[in-house]
Length: 280
Image (cartoon, rainbow, N blue to C red; front, side):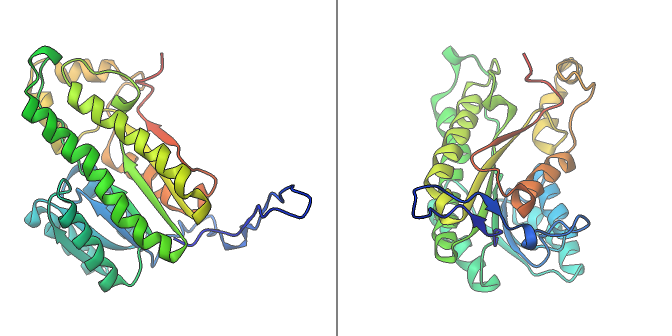
């Protein structure tokens, strides 16, 4: 993504000019994402699918990544029908080679990478810390943490060469609070926020903005299984003062804002989309 010019170059006196040239920011009725190439992992279902569809509606070209090729291709079909350039890349985000290959292929096809959304994730088991299976804990960290790391490493290599780009990592409201019975998921999402903040500090001066989005309970395929347990759905709704759970498109809207030039001064932030559920 090409960021607007920032007037913060040091002058001879050691002060900085802090006037931002807004002439390159898209008009109010334009998200400014049309024609850009954006990578989305976990694009086959749930929040990832909503993000891909929303970006497509905004005119972005897409590089989709998912472990489930059939689900991803089902998302890609209607987007291709809109005349967009869409590529599909199958793999496991926990495998660095899969992710790096996908990004390399995407750049070869699309010629650049303006934005990326590292969304793929899993919940893991439901068990107290004492009884949590170590192998499941490890898998959750591999997907949710290393998956984000692999994504950012591949994306940053491209964006550094371009001198621009925007990355959004999907964390969770569980990155802000605890969630009894889900220690691996909570630990992984705290780690995603930490990775986001650290990488944002390291690459902000190179024209790359990195932020996170922290959704609470959202109606998706991932959460559907949790709601099969009697009382869980009602308890989840009761924990959201807004009186309902979120929809994937509501998360997608937050992601698109962070990818766009409208969020030019947002760097290293964790945008909470949670229906007030994490407010003390």
